[in-house]
Image (tube, rainbow, N blue to C red; front, side):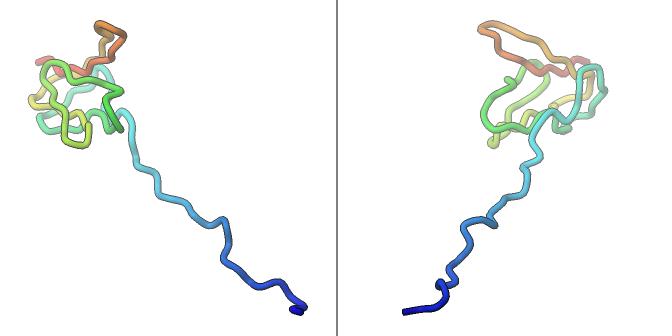
Amino acid sequence: MATKKAGGSSKNGRDSAGKRLGVKRYAGQKVEGGTILVRQNGTTFHPGVGVELGRDYTIFAVRAGTVGFKTGDKGRQYVNVSA
């Protein structure tokens, strides 16, 4: 019989780096075209006027202007860039 327990692998020790998601530019801020406004998983925020939705659900400005947020139909939150 063994006098010591076999040293198995630890059950802890796994952690991943944060994804740096969230709102990057807030309402009232001036932005240029191409500026990332929101990084998200899925459509927490929906694209409005002057913005587009990237393949990874990133919302970015397509023109220069001022950032705005508004709640629309069905409680959806929209991000806009107005000139």
